[in-house]
View (cartoon, rainbow, N blue to C red):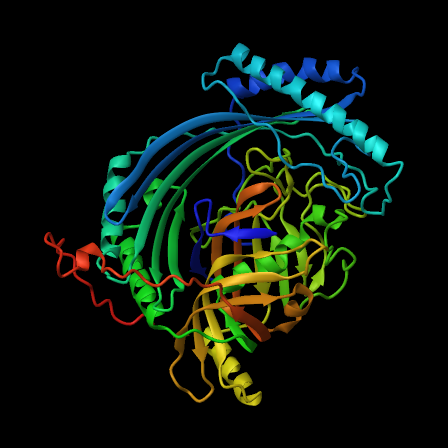
Length: 587
């Protein structure tokens, strides 16, 4: 099961404008700089290691060293008080030693058992002490070679008794051109004190509502420098800075259902941090929504026309399509391989196209979390056309080849502690037949009248979801809506409802898209799959589907708290002076 989270920091949904051409945001690479001492230490240890291990039995044919140097600042508050204020700096090495050959090596799957995607990260000295760094790399290289050699022996033995197919007999590792790129490294100084005050203010404002059980505001800032060298000749270094503010509020409905609202802001330049006014406006909006959700009725299971906002549609495409186009899933015997044999075939309406472009830094001023210049295998990030005019064209490829797809397209990604596999970056959905949202909503109402449906659904916000791609289980997905409205064909005002999940199967649901909006929305989040949690973005227009199924959401049998919140208890001997604020209507 693959899950899309609000984050390893959560996710942000924001509106952007449409375009049918490559978006602004990708820029030429910065000027080259001198390699750092860390990279020099990696190079010095690499050459003697590969020379020695090529003569070993069994021989190694590839060594790759990846180092991640990260400074992470975290400031978190809850209910008006500070929970955490911390700064951490670490430097982590991941060593890959491949034994055998490009055609068959130690990473080859044994039957229906995938080789482990985990690895043993090694902490490196924070000082730029080349001899000390080399010693740590030397120890890690020896450890990884022994493990890879043992795996390779098991692989060769298993081939005598295991059935293979065209996908599993493809080479285990692709030949790629080496890249030498020394981009600038990054660093920052973050004053935590202002953010400590801000998270206190934001969460205290949430406490103004008696509906709120708990609230959390989290500010994170990361300065990450990445280094990669390989025995093929690749030498790379680059740095990225990211900032994020998250707002989270929790409540409980009278029937025990847990209710959540969430929002966040992402930026890369300190000057682009959200203003106090903008954040407080979002705080007030979330309070209104959580209060309205408490009073909203639970909608029963439903199948019929549904309108997804651009925010919801972005998550929809990530789960329904994106994961199933990750290249490694096409060669795993345990995978459902939904689209493996459908290249060149129509899989969705002809007015839709999809591409993934990690080189995009932003869309219309909105920073994209899925940006990176090089993937975690040292391959330059590339734009990949996945679907053109409804026809499947390509897969997201790491250095694990497929028949007909012998090379990586820069999508080998992983979290520290895992091995890279093909993953999404910035997934962009475009439509050649977009209409204004008001027209799209009118089309929904006309469809309801034509089908004599008592109501349809407008899904405005999603928390994320998960998808199942393994063939041992149903090829299904589930999305978790947060803001859902009933839309009535007789002109009555929309009614906020709760308690539903979107469910379905990919091959069917993609054919149900009948129209799209002319404006798009960005989703930023962290996606958890076999290679850990990686930052991703998706961008899509609103979409009208002729048929979508919703099922009842999981709920709790626990009643709401019996006691009133302390700040709102009339018997509290020390009232806090916090009064509920009539924020008004949510729509």
